[in-house]
Amino acid sequence: MILFIYGDDIKKVKEKITATVDALLAKQKDASVFKIEGGSWRSEYVQELLNAQGLFLSKYIIVFNFISENKEAFSELVDFLPQMKSADHVCIIAEGNITEKNKEKIKKVAQKSQELLLKKIPINEPRKNEAPTFAFAMSFANREFQKTEKYFHALLDLKLAPEEVHGVLWWQMKAVRLASTAQSAVGADLGPYVFKNAKSASLKWKAEDLDQVLNSLFEMYHLAHRGKIDFYNTIERLIVRWGR
Image 1 (cartoon, rainbow, N blue to C red):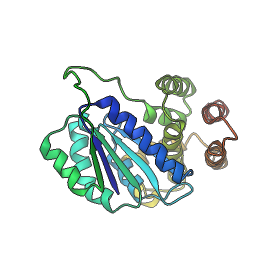
Image 2 (tube, rainbow, N blue to C red):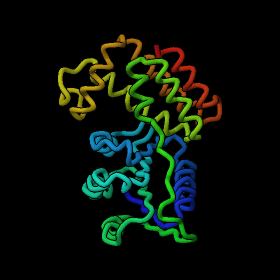
Image 3 (tube, rainbow, N blue to C red):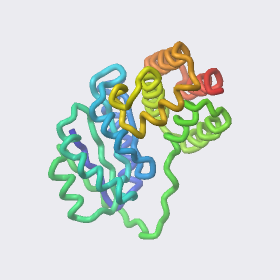
Image 4 (spheres, helix red, strand yellow):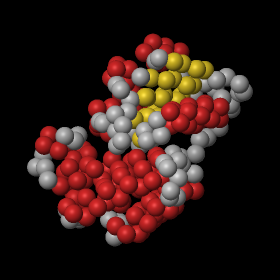
């Protein structure tokens, strides 16, 4: 399923994305949310998300956020459109100024499209760099505590939804656990690039410790969505406990 939200008014597009995700979570509170940026695009990660089963439910909410800023990534995104359309997951594509040809490619397969053209955005207005979520998750997997702390506080400053941070961390540590007992990417059911990094990181963990981290991530998601814990504080405690 694809929802396509785009237009010149970047602020309104982002606000609409947030409102759409909130509305979906109101219906399915335990749904996992993932945001993919042009700068952090990994085709293996996208492939695995589209084929994966959710943490609590079968569906994910996957936000593809201004992927066209990375031309190579956007080309791959277009190739993924048929798979997104048929996936059980909700795929939300957010874009600003893209060509009419590319708009039509996405609109053709989207269940719903919305264009937001409420005000003019200067062509040369720069966007802030996107969040270093992958770098954060990878540094934690490698138990590089100082880097993990640095990236975590950068994510805090960007005021990202904790579900986004948790989602990438969950995916990364699950990959490390799978790689820890597998001899090949095929055996771990991971892409070659993902497997290589996850296998290297797994050498720094005991199997029982990886299981404890995954259990903690599982439990905190459940508790946070029921208002019983502060999501970000609990993630930070996990970093302090296991990140070294």
